Length: 113
Length: 114
Image (cartoon, rainbow over all chains, first blue to last red; front, side, top):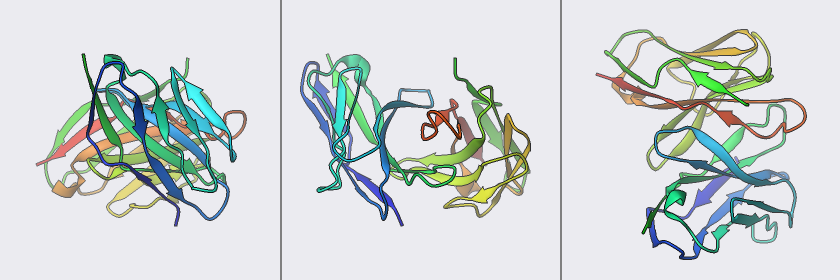
């Protein structure tokens, strides 16, 4: 079945550092790809998404590009802030029916001032 | 504004009790989902529903059932709670059109089974 693998955490960075969180996927069809973020004590929020190959999703300074040839959707941000501390989940949707999501295991990110 | 609410943020139950977790969405969404979140495992789909009175098993349905009598409400039922069901439970909903592949999540219910 479809699956998503994220780089293991936790990840700790200093403020203004460059961030990359790796995500690769396995899917039989042409999935849509997502990054969700979970701030402490809250549910998940959609951060960005891409629905076809070579699409770039972006939001709040974060970016990710749908790379079909490497089956990847890595999350990047050029300069992180303390407020970016959260758990980040990569996910895919197979585009069928109710469009269930398959999630990676999550990466906890901590940004120190 | 999009809103998914869950009946409790924290719940403590005893082994063998019947447990109801309620989820309500105000966006007129067709699809609703129940996940459990465990450290190192991400979110795993328990059940989902694509219409009133319709339900489909997800990846880990054992020990759970669901009910969807009204479009806006989706209930998760633990018939006889066990300690291995201690977890964070997240509800989500999505539309069948427009932003149909975007799921909106509630704040979660942290369930402890003693």
